[in-house]
Image (cartoon, rainbow, N blue to C red; front, side):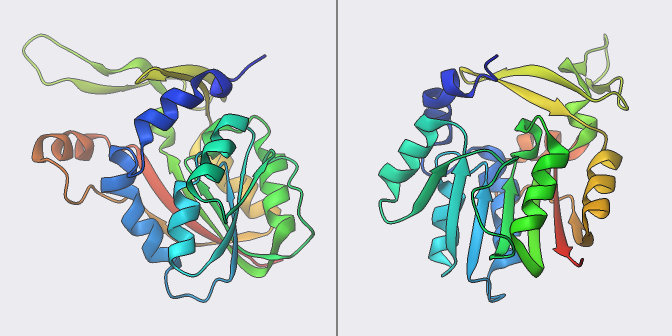
Length: 236
């Protein structure tokens, strides 16, 4: 059964463009770059690279990235935008790379798309060198546990964010800007346990706020922020 990405690829390309969507441009790009710039990373793998935007950003920093994504149309777009880059059709659960060969692994809002998360984390651990870093941007688990409309509107009161069945892992269909894809909800504890058990240690955790965005949208985001950022290190 399709997860929606093949059918939504062109709408994704149109929505993200060259500059990225709102969350990437105003919330995540700056702290993601700050975690990797000037740290001596030589090689990287961007797992779920989509149309290759963050790979191009890493190349600008002197890092040599490999972009991996299961959606053929997105990899084709990445190759079109970056002909000298290394972009491969593949899945996070079965990376076509030798053991212990990569300095940095990146999952930029892609863990929520991966059905077999334990396999993907094990594969990421396998391809990283000892001491290598895994940089994750992800949706907050209380956001993915939200009800379909996300906000409860009560008469005479400001809307309130809605969360339900937080501890129940599940997949749901999410739609925006013509895109309709499957997203996985998992409690934060599931991510933390899998990463710790795989042999990673947590080195950094942040819930970044928007910078440079319009005041109204920034205020709404601060009420119920929906992104987090983590850096993990392979220690065993």
